[in-house]
Image 1 (cartoon, one colour):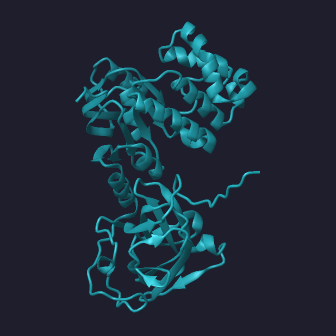
Image 2 (cartoon, one colour):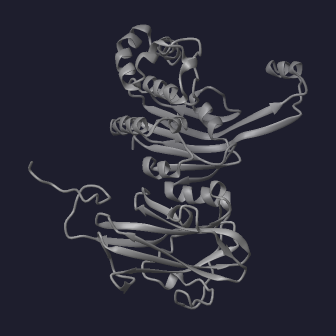
Image 3 (cartoon, one colour):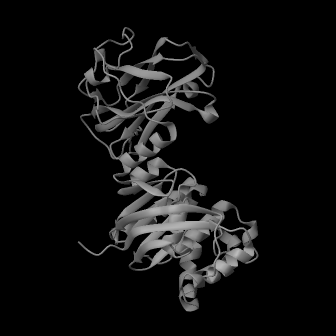
Length: 420
């Protein structure tokens, strides 16, 4: 195996608070100066990244993700531990970092480019490509203060990726760009990775984690809570936010007639690897897949209609609940998701009482290519802009889809062809 491009060994970072600026100043020179408070933003992180690997950092706000990136890029120095970087690193950490609001975009390229190690002659040669990739037109010669956040992101990414780095670090900045530019950025990232560039990203988009990373580090209160497979890291991250419900076991039942026991593990295509989480107060206990008049068919036929039923037992009163489903590819791609609020345009006000058992049904066309998909169930409460998950069973069921002919991609858009 080749040497890692990045290795961290017991890296920690402590920020100290002093009673006065004079006391802090004294501490810089080793004079007696006792801190009145200490905050460990990062504590004992150890990891390695190989050439071409992609690592996602996830965690709650304030967990220590951005601090860790600043340590890796040298913006901050660790209190203890060692960081080894092999090769050239290019980072996009914050919008406007290294840029001046009063300089034009072109002037900022030369200023910020010089700060990250480019010579003026190199930047002159690279400028046409940077300008073409950013696609901000005449704004390249206007002051940065008139730029939108998306335009700043375009210019920052174009500069950071003007040449292929050994490590590319991106901290949420792409989330402010439009979909077209995000796709363009990820195409360039994918091309760099094929050539050996390692990617280090911080994002709250869990779909981006499973799609673009082959490793993930979950950070909680500055410590590594999990380091490994991205999907598992995402599930643990959701659990850390909403809590985890432990499944209960019971005798088999049928939809609408269950006695309230959890019978998921008696149903065809159930995945014991499902991830169940939520605040509690409701339990998703049973499900049924129906298509072509058959319950639990061995495979759904592409372009057929499928009915997805699931039953929920409520342990508390709720003025408004929202059931929903989510379909994903095995690679984590979000294929389709919806809920009762979206499908009824907000006209469905579902009120339930403690002890009540309700059955929900979603009907949808299976306009998908042949393959296997993961089905998730959920029930939430509260306003749509701030839903509280009561019970969610992610990746609980495998849905096989078959079709005699094929096409490229995931969705069947039912194109036609003719010679005009």
